[in-house]
Image 1 (cartoon, one colour):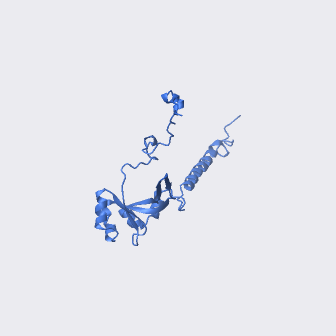
Image 2 (cartoon, rainbow, N blue to C red):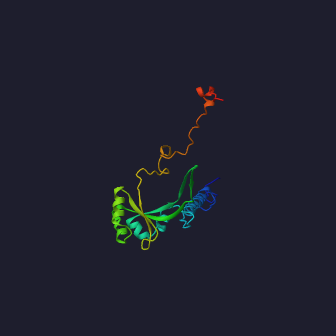
Image 3 (cartoon, helix red, strand yellow):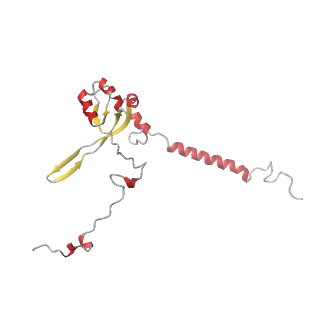
Length: 191
């Protein structure tokens, strides 16, 4: 008769069936996902690739003082040249540096190092701004009164169609008078 022996391809001693293949495929699949995630999310400390907040924190000047009293930042310095005759705007190559933005409650850190005068503090307080610096706080850092924009937008997190500076979509082209039913179509300049 047929069946019952238990030694067939799907029996206890047969192996090689679909049930024994599933754990192997599942393990390989999970291993592949794990390897892909670990390779993709590896922290890259190459200064040409700043992709995470952690890298910016590590690059902050006097990072322990900065992170305790403020926020690490990327500071972009650039120059804008404006000529009036003829009217032109020229922009210099931007330079990005690591910096620190101090919380308003922690300005004393800068004052105690004689990096701020009482006049500078008073002027910065009038505009409800704060201070930021670039360079070693124990040396001669560049300290600036900086405005905190409450309206600053991160379009990666918000709806870009509501952006103040543009939504990434070209505006509709303005039609020339010759393309409309404008009275200017029949205008002839005097000769």
